[in-house]
Length: 129
Image (cartoon, rainbow, N blue to C red; front, side, top):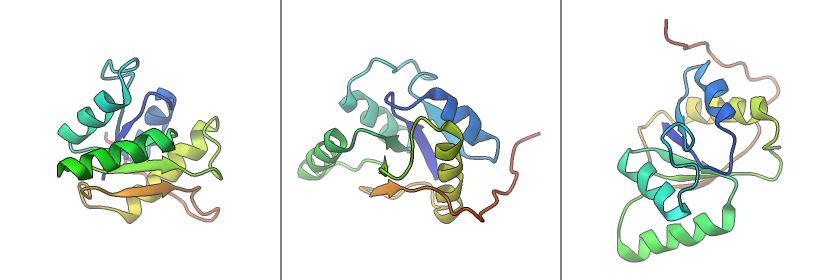
């Protein structure tokens, strides 16, 4: 699964998550740091990336809007309250774990929660040479 990190989460998470091979870009990296939530999800959808956000309410509303219009997005992954978003390594690890469970490119209209990875889970090092 490919991910797009919303502007409300640090770009450092993307950098850390790439180490074990997660396919992820951040809003900062694609110069959308100050873009609206609608622009963020549109970019992610056009690029076939599941958006990762801490902004639950706004993205649930955007999911409803997309469904009403019959337009697919490439998924919304909301950080769970149990996942401290200030702990960049924990979020990156959770993304690597989620990615290991969901190998499809994207799941249209997916709305899910990103939880901490199990304590005993060890990511496979898939970092490119």
